Image 1 (cartoon, rainbow, N blue to C red):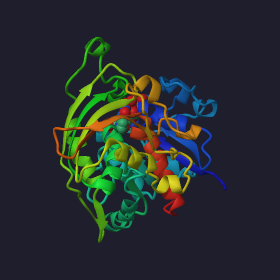
Image 2 (spheres, rainbow, N blue to C red):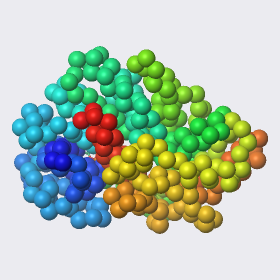
Image 3 (tube, rainbow, N blue to C red):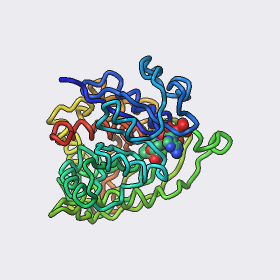
Image 4 (tube, rainbow, N blue to C red):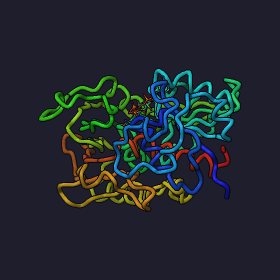
Length: 359
Ligand SMILES: NC(=O)c1ccc[n+]([C@@H]2O[C@H](COP(=O)([O-])OP(=O)(O)OC[C@H]3O[C@@H](n4cnc5c(N)ncnc54)[C@H](OP(=O)(O)O)[C@@H]3O)[C@@H](O)[C@H]2O)c1
């Protein structure tokens, strides 16, 4: 099978670099164009990107010359699919321009997440929401389309709520997060602010963690996504960890379930991407650790098999009863914020789009 040519918008940033790394040697996709701001345009990628992730920069991508985010330039290179890691305020217009020009856009920016005709896709949770693409195209007169991923903290949470909702029902959820520095971008949190410290506020984060799951867990019906009703209270905090968001989750289930039953439901979660054996789908999607002191960011952030799915699994531990609620359960979870929470989720979405004939 010939590989599909793809482009990356915002390719030099933290999430953009993850795309470059995850798409190196991808069996279905080949990076053809890397794009960034005027400050980077015209430079070779290796000069424009301050590379700060573990796997070395792929040699061939380092040689590409960074372009502006111009759909015509991408078209000339044969690109059909673009991954967007742009700041939200830039993404709004640029992503629309690409969709109007016929590109499939898989985005991590929040600019279009809340548009009623744009899905927030977590491939393991709401693959049926892809059907809204037809309505989006019709509404907007686009030959292309936009699919977004959720906020990085939401992804890990919703991946665990979905099997619980299906098995037991959920009355309400409380979550306290411990979020990594990379979630704020390279220049996000000054070292003087975070060393020896915790910052108990992340702008707009609690609102996103409470509201995005309603759309993701909602039902697609007659061209609309009808929101779920799973009340979520969140308290979000920045901690001195490089990568990997940790979350303490308290769930009032619809009916009583033991920690063993909950662990079984997590372990048996086998949604569509896993059944289809998509290249970046982690097997299993949720890993349950039995040790009392796991998950931990240093040991669990790259969880996921096969090797292409490193950092794609959500790791859960410390599943126990929560006696404050009659049907309460609590657990810790960890997910890699720039892989599972951003670039990896969108690559998996693109694989699902291809497997289902949208590309
Ligand atoms: N970090 C995470 O964990 C995470 C998780 C989920 C979602 N997101 C979302 O993903 C997006 C990227 O986040 P990030 O952390 O990777 O940000 P970042 O490190 O600041 O990178 C931003 C990228 O956008 C480019 N850019 C900036 N202004 C531009 C313009 N006017 N035109 C074209 N390109 C422009 C930058 O290019 P230059 O290098 O040339 O400036 C850079 O490549 C954001 O919308 C963020 O909210 C981030």
